[in-house]
Length: 131
View 1 (cartoon, helix red, strand yellow):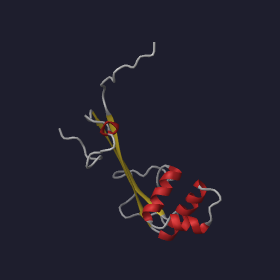
View 2 (cartoon, rainbow, N blue to C red):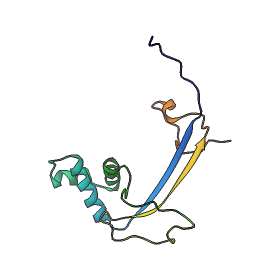
View 3 (cartoon, rainbow, N blue to C red):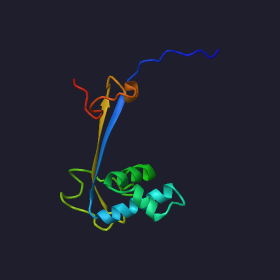
């Protein structure tokens, strides 16, 4: 018997994440993103990669597609006590990015998970639910 069961309501857990990077060398950022584009699209010329990765938005999108996050090889960069001093930058990374901290906020009991909004997401999907 393979009947469908109605969806059971349960607890929703939402994790909101912020990861910051500082672009210390725009040319290296663009070169790294174009190389990532070529990794994703083997056989594409450097010219085609340059046409398709033309600005910082393209570069960020391609790096996220290729690695899942910006500065993916960087170890976690805590903020506050135990973290790097304010204004400290890593200037020698091949991608021209300096990881600048990450935070996560866990919300238990958000009333509407993202999937339940369908294609009409809320105005600010990162807003915390009001009490």
